[in-house]
Image (cartoon, rainbow, N blue to C red):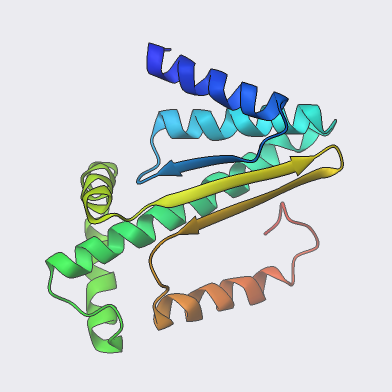
Length: 166
């Protein structure tokens, strides 16, 4: 663990010990960001006396964070391709190309481009001895087609018996 990673990890620990709201801001999900998320969840759920929920909550928060970063990166991609993300025809064309090209390397490249444009993902942990609330947001508006897809996934998820199935 390098010095910067150790300092951030210590700041997470101190924030949690002092009962402060903790926010992590990122432009792409890297191994170190995943470790920060894991560290925050470990410490909070240990403090709340619910350590058995760590794997489930970590998976959910990581997935939401990846999706928030990808949504921002997608905007950069659409801008570079001169496609209007709000236009259904452009969206259909762009999303096919985006998915075909997407890779870890592309995520790193477009994460840096998103940062330059001021796009970010914010992961906020608020907690008390009774439990916690986690909010994952990005600072770009959702496109109509994205909202439609999200609502379809949520509707499907309502049919599951528990969150692990979802």
